[in-house]
Figure 1 (cartoon, rainbow over the protein chains, first blue to last red):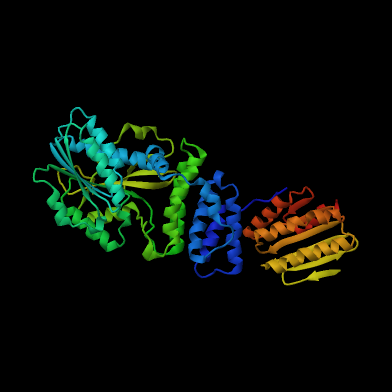
Figure 2: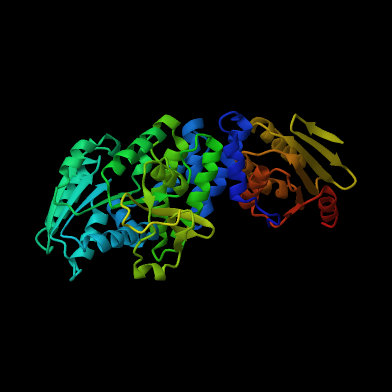
Length: 374
Length: 127
């Protein structure tokens, strides 16, 4: 019987990740192989093993095939995309509650005007927007008469779904909805055209981006984008972004950040009241992000998250002021897996243990909105 | 008495205690590792060996299929008179994982693990 302590997965993983790029030998490759072999056994019951497997899978994109083919073990956790979206929207608190907070914050303002415009950068299939329309529809005291929704989305199919779903709601909402689809990447939007789409009658401009701006490739492009958004003079600019540095060019530091972030994401998934297969399916879903963060060369990477502090800095540089006027729905009081609350640096955080995983930021260009103490 | 030696393993036999001792070091290729296992088996088949001590303290990582190969010869070692086997636990975290692989594959109550060679020898002496 084994009577000596088995090494921690995290420590051994950290060691093998240090081997790339300069120390890949037959011995270190065997160490990677042995660790992978260890992780593949029982990965469905151990988050640390699942996370290490996904990270080694990403590392193998750089060093080539080593040891067992993890795809054979992982593919049994693959869930249909429709099922995944359903799980994320209904159960994954970072998404479900972030939508709730942002939508409540938008509705709390546009319900007070007759004519409002929402620009949604990265509207996707319109899931968040539809939830917001639900809130507005149930608001008996809303003054809203016309809502223009400008949906910016690079994926044509998703945008078509969003357009269809929003248009389907027109019949049942007590206000008019104008949906304007813009099939493009956010950084390719012509802001003069965008400005022209905002009606002269518009009384309130709210801009939402949820998990989109971190796809903008360079720091300069992000700063330029912030300036252009500021020039639209939105009353609200609401950002939902992971609070982690995956913009970091150093491979090993990026690995450490990635491990920390997804360790907490997986720990939250482990607490969800869903079936084990569904939990593992969700973790595997995040494996695609890990592949991008760790497995791709810098120029090909898409998931370039930045810490909330960095977004705050970019916003302030572009002339935005920060607001703490988030409207917090009752549902926040019933979260089990995470803590939510105001983070003194200037954002609303979704925290697991000591790690704030997701940040919601409320920026404004209007003085009459209550701002934070600078 | 020296039985065998390559770059990664030295195998010695003590006639008085009828104990075969493997002393492993460094990272062995599949060929070198399996050579050590095969020479052990060969010696056990042709000589009186009551116990085997495998000192893995300085051994580096072992491929999963090589660990399984080592486990696969355990029944033959026992059939040929081996009563017990003791391992000195390796320093390397990865070799510990290799040894865990061996242990799971061998699943043998006659195999025990010790932190030092002294402890291992003491236990083997009682078998």
